[in-house]
Figure 1 (cartoon, rainbow, N blue to C red):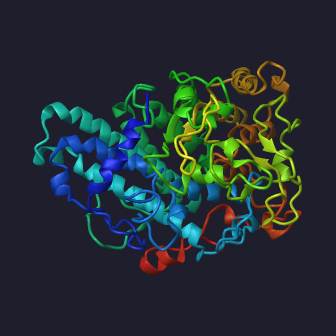
Figure 2 (cartoon, rainbow, N blue to C red):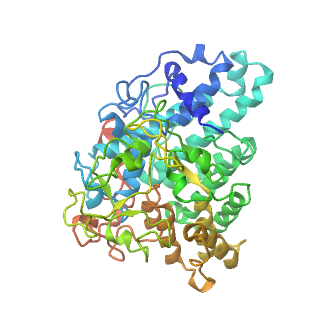
Figure 3 (cartoon, helix red, strand yellow):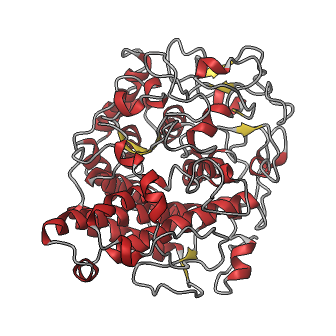
Length: 530
């Protein structure tokens, strides 16, 4: 399979449809160059428009890396979905620090962000821009609209599948919004396309909505591994449900660990298989070498999906000091991203000789961080690369070819094990140990890293999630679920703005609703503590 489907986002760029003003508060650049009335009368356009929805995770505008952004008021590369999500999920944790202090960027480390933070506002805007586009596609693919637009009966079933995928993508963005912000503005395809003030939905109610949506579309999605690479299938629905249920106690106050066991097991048994190589999952040809594990990806191509966000950011920003950018398939390093000594300590052997997931660059780097702005303070991470599995360069040395996994099978192995340990029924500790050892055998290349049931506990799972999933946008959510994100039970360098680390208030388990959003929409209430 190829990335051809996602490439169609380029074609869709010239025919984006009218958007509902889903938040009224977002400074979004108008992008409508053709109306829904004309675009949706030709069924040959539908797949390209769907590609634009998927492309929302990858691209930032209509003409490439700069020039016609979806979101104005911030550097276009910074407005990238994946770049923004990474920064909000990783920079406030033990997994990542950044040397730049563009605007308020280092406030993420110090955990003293405010509602006026431009990076938080950009992610908020990106989420609801994505949701708005999904809403319009879903509106235009209802049975009534298909009939009024003259879409032939032979194309209706395909249209229904496209519509289910759009509902999944909307649910995914609402999941991210719920996780990051808690209670957010709420608009669906049933709302009028107009300029108005959306109401705010509670986190608990949004959880229920996402759950209902996913269960409703389950039967309409392609079977697991039957869709094109980069497009969601039934296993992705199960995977998002598993994530939802694993964190249900945080979101609603009610544990759903049995459901997390059920749906993670569905994914594990769906036909996806672990990729042979851990390192290859983060290289320029991961769409070829690792598609058996990568359930859902944000796809990138150096020629067709150029952006200064996404994996272009993750690769360039992680190269600095004495590192040779050419060894990562890029033409320069931006000297920004590194990690903390607390994360390094998760690995008993940091050389990668045993656990190959220990991908650190240490030459000329200090393990401890004295100055966040000094790239050589803190070990660098070499996980992401624009080299292929055969060590050839990606197609472009500035804009990379490496896809970003939004969901992969290994996460489901870890979800199953944690849910069982937290009391979920329908699984077993022995099976959980097997699933964890599957990951560790890949990492070690043999059984030397295997664990026993006696070694399997919740803290081990948290640490193993760090070792397996680092820099993929999971750590903040994981630390919150474990009650370790804000308080003094676990501190790491520069947590709370102190070199040794310090506790911060529990209200920071959610981000503030941006001031710009609340000024524009009087229906939005601020999260407690802000």
